[in-house]
Structures are given as structure tokens and as C-alpha cells.
Image 1 (cartoon, rainbow, N blue to C red):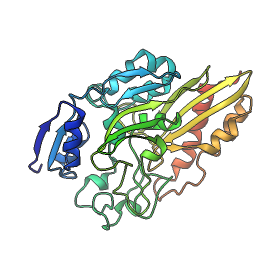
Image 2 (spheres, one colour):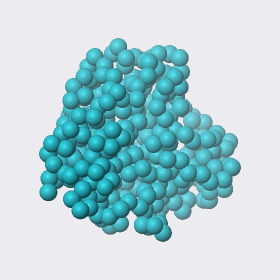
Image 3 (cartoon, rainbow, N blue to C red):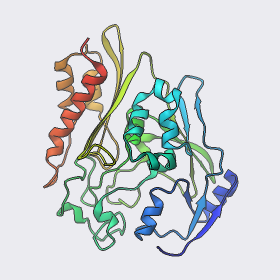
Amino acid sequence: MHPFSYTRVSNTREALDAGRGGGRYIAGGTTLVDLMRETVERPETLVDITGLPLSEITVTERGGLRIGALVTMSEAAANRKVRTTYPVVSEALELSASAQLRNMATIGGNIMQRTRCTYFRDVTADCNKREPGSGCAALHGVNRTHAILGTSDACVATHPSDVAVAFAALEARVHLLGPDGTRQVPFVDFLLRPGSTPQHEQALRRGELITTVEIPALPRPLRSGYLKVRDRQSYEFALTSAAVALHVRGGVIRQAKVAAGGVGTVPWKLPAVEQHLVGERPSESLWAAAAERAADGARPLQHNRFKVELLKRTVERQLRVVGGTK
């Protein structure tokens, strides 16, 4: 680990001043500290923001939810408002990491976490995300766990967050505070596909701070849930996952929100699946037909071709669990 300075701030003004000067924000530290230990990240200054007032979960005027950036994963998962209105979020959180990590890691840090690609974390390997222009060792290396959607010739690493998949499905928005004031970014635009610049991972401006993630109010009744498929039952990242939310009224699907994880360079929204569902009546044949569209545009690699079929089956299963057939 390389030398660094540390400062603890007590208000957002101090935080923004430190961030504008190049400081890296840290709260739970469950990702950044690991990367620093492995010398993948070498920040000169850490800015401890745990004292900021960003730890509340509130209901918006229209009935949505705002989750503060410093709310821990375990706090969000256990929150009654989250569990009753958007169980897909609490389920995604509970299927993430270990209980000890969930007690430390924050919502803001979780969506900001960097890939678990082994080549990214091996400083001796070529990685455009870590060292732009060096190449991507995963393209022709062992790439079983890598992405099949949203990839480029520069990067095929998956985004590791589970709750980010739920946020993408629900069309959440990220609230930001920076030197130029406040702004909101749709979640699907906040995390960036690699393209030719995989080192740019979020739509953050210099010194900006995540304050809340807002889930919009969706029509009721709303059923939702999260399914994660992985190599082992606990403490493992997704091979595929599916976040599904369905509004069914009068026996017809009025709204459908679907996203996938473990297969994309970012949490992958599935509009083709959603469009196939809206206006139809729940049935086994509908779930199967809609899930066939889940892998549209996939570009599998040598070792992860199985993810195409696994993704379809994962989406179909979760549609069946959330939507039923009645």
C-alpha cells in the first residue's frame, strides 16, 4: 500500500472542497481499501465522509423512496419501507456479500464499486480500465465470468453490484452534489459502458458527491423480486441475475421493469423483455417468450457462451416467481 493522507470532514462544504482538490471519498471502505492494498488504486488523499448527514431513508411526496448514500446495505435491506414497497431492493442487498460487509458497506459505495475482474486486480496483467492503452487480457484469457452485453474491444469486465441491478430495473435516479450545485442522473446513465474509455466508469464530475438514490413511485399493486445465480450459495458474485417488478391490474400487465446482472459491463436494462410483457396476461408461455429476448445483442466470449442460455432461464424463472400465472 502506498502512502496517503487522511482527512475527516463534518459537512458537505468541507467534503466538496476536499473532493475538488483531488481527494477520494471513503465511507465503509470495503472496496477502496482492498484496491489500495493490492496497489490497484493509489489515492493521495482519502476524505472520510461518514460524518455527513446522508444516512436517512425517506418517502417522497409521490410515494417513491430516497435512500441516503451513507445508509449501509444492512440498514437498507432491513428497512420496513424498502422491504414493503420495493422488496427487489432488499432481496438484492441480502444476496450481496457477507453480513459483516453489509454492516459496513454503504449504498453510495456499493454502486461505485469497481469490477472484480481478476485481470483488473492483477497489476501485472494488461487492463485498459486500470492502465488505458495497455490492452484487455480477458479478451483472450480466462473469461468465464465476464460480460456478454455492453462489451467493447477495450473491456469485457462485469459490474459486480447486485442492488445496482435493482436500481436499474426500477429506473432510479442518482442525486449528486458538486462544486456547481446539485443535479440528478438517471441510474442507467450513471454507470458508463466501457467503449474506448473503460477507465471512465461513472458520470461523476470532479469533486461530486452522491447524496441519495431515488426510486420513483410506481403504480400499485407492484410485485418485485431479485434472483441471483452463482457458483456457490454464499459470498459469491453473480453469473447471472434478474431484477423484476410487475404492475398487474385487471389480469393484464400494465408495467414491467426488468434488468439483469452478471452479464453486462453495467447493470443491464432489458427493454425488449419489458415491451413483450406490457399489455399481456401472465402465463407460462408469456414468460418464456419474453425471456427469449433477454440476451438480444449478446457477444459471448470463448468461456462464457453458457451465459446466453443461463440469462434467458434466469429471467424466465424470476418472471414466473414474481408474476405467477393467475
